[in-house]
Image (cartoon, rainbow, N blue to C red; front, side, top):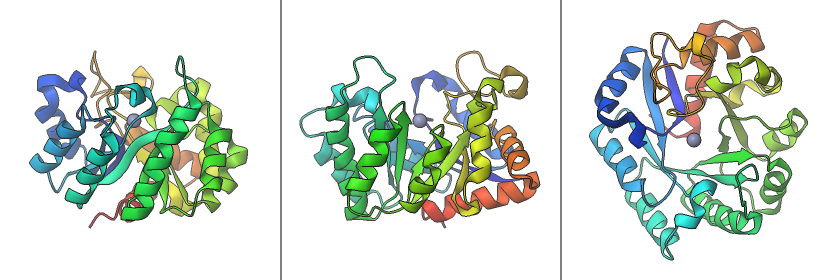
Length: 262
Ligand SMILES: [Zn+2]
């Protein structure tokens, strides 16, 4: 069974010296490709370097994550535009809205988000969006902006009732292993109602690990291993009542199409 990791952060320092081995194990586990998401100016160079070292395996995404908005320089959007322009394989992310974090400033987050919207339209590149406890303002922002290229709601845990409106706006939805925790069952079940051509799987490594019992043989003390994605596919397949093979092939086709991978 082969698949694509639609969202991770391989540049995260938690991988440390393990990273070459981790990439090797992802490939051995059947992962054909992965989208590596930057979070701020501080890690964009590391994301770009990973793409340059593994051009056919890792595609870079550049964006300003809501947790990092305070770290931005005055020229952050100029740098972002230059990177997108200079990197044909790039997409835009991770960006979005977060009202779960401490001291969240929604007005500031919306301002930053709109810059990403404009760049997505200008370059015709898909966006990867983060949303925690901010679904009504995100839906409103999406409805109030001019039409966007298709975008990915990564680790989707939003209200199922919003799915039809989000689909209409061009949303795709990815499942991470975190939703295999029993307390997240409702979020997992929401994936039954998403159109087949809009579903994806992701690791979000080094975060969003599945329950411990699903991590073997990739359990690590300090990070969630991105080769762990087959459990996600099995869970998604059972929710949608299709075979794991069918589910893996479907997600792979969707991710290739969304991120314009060859
Ligand atoms: Zn992420």
